[in-house]
Image (cartoon, rainbow, N blue to C red):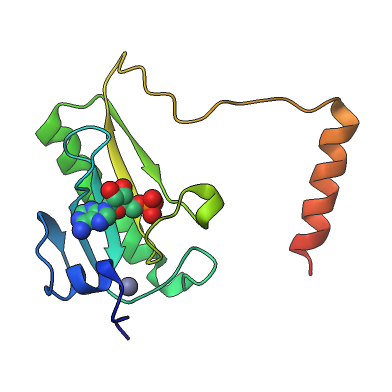
Length: 140
Ligand code: AMP
Ligand code: ZN
């Protein structure tokens, strides 16, 4: 069901214009209007799904196929040497539109873009402890 106030539902059903680059039965892809680099594309399922936790596995292959198709085309069209596939979940992670989407961002050698800063664990046991905590939660 489309959500009335969801901008990506409205784009997907044609109510709001977009710079569309690809569409099939399940997904649509259009340019992000505030691109990291020109050609930065968003892939959305046509169905309203909030985030990765609500995303049904049945749609995964449709999205994976669209990501490959669009990424290949975007690399060819922009001359990019690589690309990032990013997907934000929750406000804290930078999600601003609560209709799941995958960012496909063209990347150029030496473009200087730092996507994130990595840290370290205090020691090996802190790392093991974290792994244990997560693996126990996975089993729940
Ligand atoms: P996120 O921060 O991961 O939720 O990404 C939302 C993205 O949607 C941002 O990069 C915005 O620039 C982009 N965006 C928001 N509204 C539109 C729109 N009407 N058309 C194209 N891109 C949009
Ligand atoms: Zn939506």
